Length: 355
Ligand SMILES: C[S@@+](CC[C@H](N)C(=O)[O-])C[C@H]1O[C@@H](n2cnc3c(N)ncnc32)[C@H](O)[C@@H]1O
Image (spheres, rainbow, N blue to C red):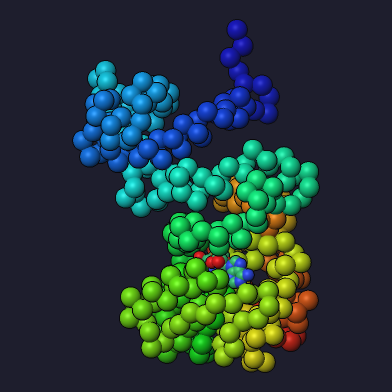
């Protein structure tokens, strides 16, 4: 019998049927939603006890655990007793990666995941399917429920890891007042203001996020240097800033809307001001060498953006082209330790410097 993989297929390549299997992602989400890892860690290791703690039917839970244990997600060291494996540990609520919240079907993440069966429609139409599935666009749907907004803001505060280091990697010495456009609950503004005591800052966002940002910035003792203002970034932005920051905002939108957001920033910024974009950027050429893990992350996020928002990931040149429509010129570009890149644009023409 020939045990060699077919030519061109690496030996470790998983079977396509395995990759496309739909049960595993949902079984993991069920475990995350039922907080099985937390309950086991708290000592509810026997099936009846675990079922009661999780609010699950014991026989159905047994079947879920049978599925998961034979995939090394949970272990059964003795019949009817369950334990954590390294994979299951990642489902603990206090795990630093906080994956559990991203997999919780009862949180906003579940609402986002439920659009995935419609990916083919998004690929056919080239735009978001969110309104088709949930009856309202992504941001309208979030805005309609304070609980959903809060759940989403918690997720966003966590993924903002990609912009980690923006307070030190970018030169803030000449900036006086930064307006964090679509700044969410103010976590990034807090990082920047903490590192630069000369700076003032304003979060400009939708109502639910602004309420939370005000509370958060006050809790951080930043009331004298920071505030938050409700705005529609497609219409107008708070005046008075000399830096308008768009952190992980433009990827949510198609080119036409992203250009409109850049236009409101360019209009609000003074002649000697700047517009900053912080995003993970695509490599300039598809064939450019890329870390495979980064390629998987970027392409996954790109599809999410299409599906949920009709948005997209972009290259630095794509951003420069969109910003040029508002008379903004790329001045510097610097990769941040968290993986995002901060692009600095200035009004008017100017030479490009790369950092
Ligand atoms: C992906 S989150 C990014 C949050 C934050 N900048 C960060 O890096 O973590 C996008 C933000 O855009 C805000 N947003 C969406 N539509 C908006 C609008 N029309 N005007 C102002 N903010 C808006 C959302 O409320 C959300 O906080």
